[in-house]
Amino acid sequence: MRLIFNQRIYPKFCINLFVLVLVLASQMNAQSLQPTSEYLKKSEKTAAENLNNLLNNIQTTVYLENNTLKTFGEGNARCLKSDIASISMLNAQNSAFTNIEIIEITLAKKGDDKNSSLKASLTSNFPKLKYLLLKSEFELGKQEFESIIADFKNTNIVLLYEVSIPQ
Image 1 (cartoon, rainbow, N blue to C red):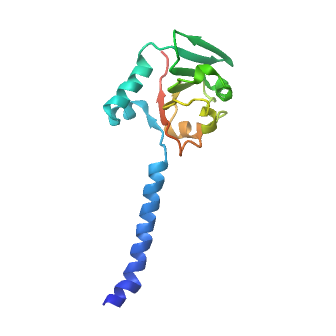
Image 2: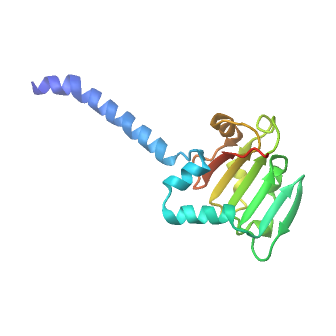
Image 3: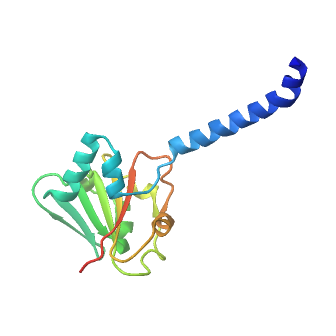
């Protein structure tokens, strides 16, 4: 009886256990894209309050629009808002990026999602970055948002998205 267990069941058990460990390990490292509202509901209170503060309260903010950098407010900026066309400016070393905790990138017109790619390396100049928010002003699904981002699986950056169609 013991021989049957060793020859038939034990190898299958080991393979299944190995596959389970691989799946769990990949899910732990993967940073998944999620709707902002879902993240706020599921996250711990302090993280939700911090994100709400960054999104909804008046802050010193860096704006990257039409490949131009402007800062509005007093003190160190914690927020950066960019149009998709200006994301290459994230590569620049700039003291205004030092305290940025959230980058919000807006997709303003259809086609912005097709011609754009955002790599994790673009965020290397942001030592305090916690959140990356992709915001679309037209109907866009999760898969289209996912096609824009790359290489964020091994980062601690929370990846968020939302659709906010102007009236």
